[in-house]
Image (cartoon, rainbow, N blue to C red; front, side, top):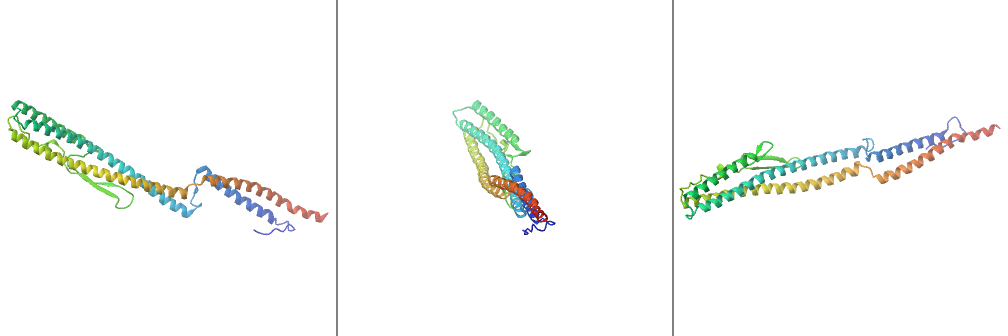
Length: 278
């Protein structure tokens, strides 16, 4: 800061020093007040160019992680729809097997076996209805065509999961030709064995869906941790420490008053030179 020479009244250096100090204080007070108003430490790139760049990268990643978590949530919901349909079909297969075991005994007659065959046909038709109705965004999930589907599981290249449901769950596919009322107990027993195999097939498909759901849940937890840490890094760089800014605002408000007083005093200082002319 330039030294003051009050004997040279044409250039009031002391007043200029006080003025520049006041302007600097005003600027710092304005910055503190802006940060308190917005909650942001960086309100323009000028405040911290490097910090702004870092914070922007963290913001991009944070928002990308949020999108990835939303996608995983949708994928889990889709798999839950598929699992719900699979479990209903599994329940129907159990009923079909139980009925076929009843018919696989000569303790029942032709009329009873005919009734069992009719009921099994109804169950098979209901399975077809479930397959038709179990859809997601227009895609049937249980007819064997929902395969090799790509799910985004993160924000980086390669953060994907490919899965599908290749088993055709339609009744016409799982339930082979149903014996009739005149079929023998042995033929009904063979049919029951086939339904047992179908139950194992559906069970394997359900397990596959469950495994993918478990994997997605684990990845969702991983993304939540990443998102929290990324947000913490962004917050540390971009957002204001409100307590510190309040302290600064109070300090600069006091300095503003003292700088104003010193400017007034500096402006009146050269008047002492007038005493030399008395």
